Image (cartoon, rainbow, N blue to C red; front, side, top):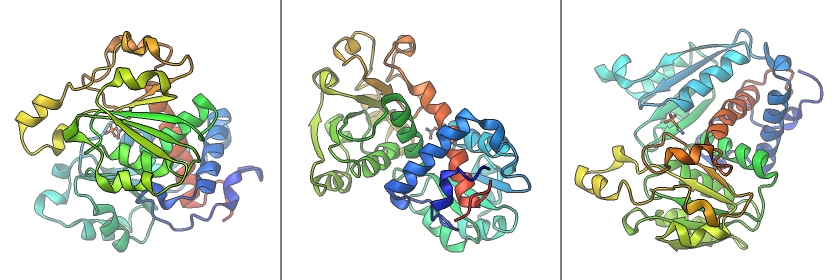
Length: 321
Ligand code: CP
């Protein structure tokens, strides 16, 4: 890479990325600028990770996170290995996360882990000899989705400060929501509008994160239409079926909020609709062609920001930390 690579100042040496606050605002800013540069000049990075391997260990289903990490490593000239379900690994025979991580530390230069149990990436980090990246742990955190979200906001709105962010849907179990709030409270003047059914309100520890930051605020709403005119971002989420204890509650709550083009009529002209995806029913497919929709661009940005993160963690591409 060129000497101009901004990551040369980032101190992410042999670090694990477990929580969206494991990177400082300054480090996130440098990752965003690097991702912009990769997007603009991909050929410059095409061999940056030659000879390096990335393991993707997915104990839960995924399309975007696993495949974007794998595409990211391949586009950096590296190689990938891993598994996409518990059943296709020795977890099915009872092997612990700790033992799996000890073993894979000898096979790969970095490990991306998704696991249904909250805290599994912390256990993994304790036993790893290479960087561990949390790709989603239960209902807790999803830091690289947050990097994806921040890149989307940075590229589509040009600014991460003073924004009014509507978060809609399953705010209780939605780990992307918890991660995004914990990241966005560090940008001055962020206002959150939390739109959910009473039973799917954001957990108290998440609300407390907003309350303790001067200049940040939140209000709660049960109607998307009331919130719409004030929003800079509408972040839709899926009701997390896999985290419910009984099917009846899921069926009752799953269609609490459905965004359609009619509800978007009162939105500000520049407002963007985001969604970490997968979508089920919560965004009508006719919104896909609406000028506010950005969720497919968001999924693509995820590949570029993960490329920037891999470069930083592996100290590759001329990056000198
Ligand atoms: N946004 C996200 O985590 O999608 P996947 O579950 O497909 O990885």
